[in-house]
Length: 132
Image (cartoon, rainbow, N blue to C red; front, top):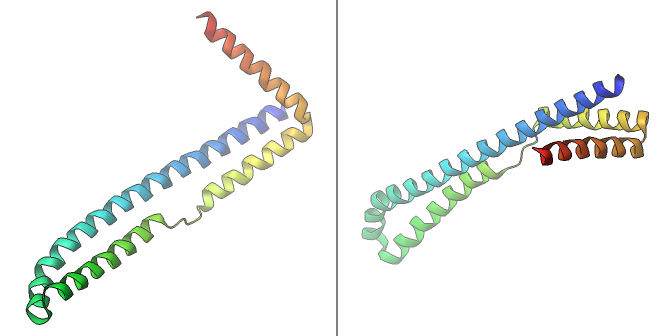
């Protein structure tokens, strides 16, 4: 009975870890889309507002270089915010619980027995699907 509890704990912890990983992926994707939107808006607004002023003072080439540099810096800042990989403490704890449960399960049954049991279970599932 203890082994089924350990399997249940490991599966539950792995589910939490995977859900947190997927959530983090989508949050990062949304932040990246926001960063790209701000980069585009910044490029348009800065070039419209500052372009005329810089052009009258320094000429066309310097104005283009100044505005391009500003756009690049802002795009890099938002991309960095979206792509930084901060560790998720809940996902790390769930992974540790899963590993501990798997280690205890392997210790109680042995790796060979565990693999054999999983293989038998998968075989039953496969045979059940192929008959339908």
